[in-house]
Image (tube, rainbow over all chains, first blue to last red; front, side):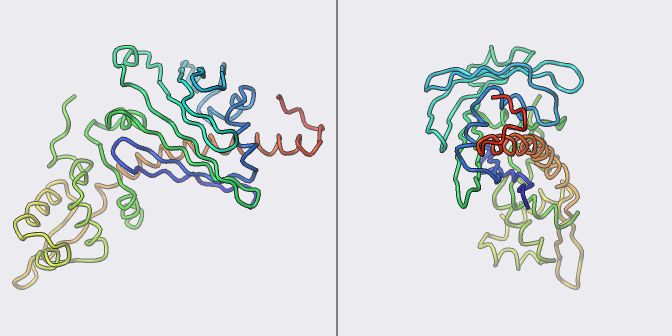
Length: 166
Length: 120
């Protein structure tokens, strides 16, 4: 199989999300695709829309900002700052969702820290993205798809249980 | 919005680690309270309390069997939790599928194959 298919999403604690996916490419290329504006534009929105702008100042303390138009026509933007960069291995950056309701301006804790870790073996690369929110409700909002509040823990074990019963 | 009460929301009901252990145990089959107490090393009152919460959100059913009360898992209230994680996973899948395509293209480029029009 050329492509590795599925991302696995786990919730290691009530403020974290861990996404793991293997790619059929060396780590240097995955790193390049994660940090080069013209390339980020081409994958970052997935099927949710299109990326209109990508600014990347690739140095510790440097800023990044992505603007996308989601399917449905509304614009959303994210920005942050690089905290740690190891070429081909690791990217640690903050991420702020520029909530149109202004929550990101009102709450200085409204950000996540994303750690991208790249591990290469036999020309393939495993990418782990650990998203750490400062508060459980921010993480929940991150994935919130219309559920009521109060969802602070959803563990793998349970997901497995749910699957086995589906 | 206030948090949902523990007894009305499956998400909160499963936030308690002991209650998750009980669910894991019941996933393997029906059990009596005595069984659960023994397996998890909890006290009887603790176990009963957790089982009551799980029953109120519909995650466990109970039936009388002779002198025993047997508890079993009903996974349906877990579906929203499963769906919630799943929606998120699908978003990342779409994103990473697009990244696969970009990687294929820049791999070609690295090999000196300029037949594609990778924007770099």
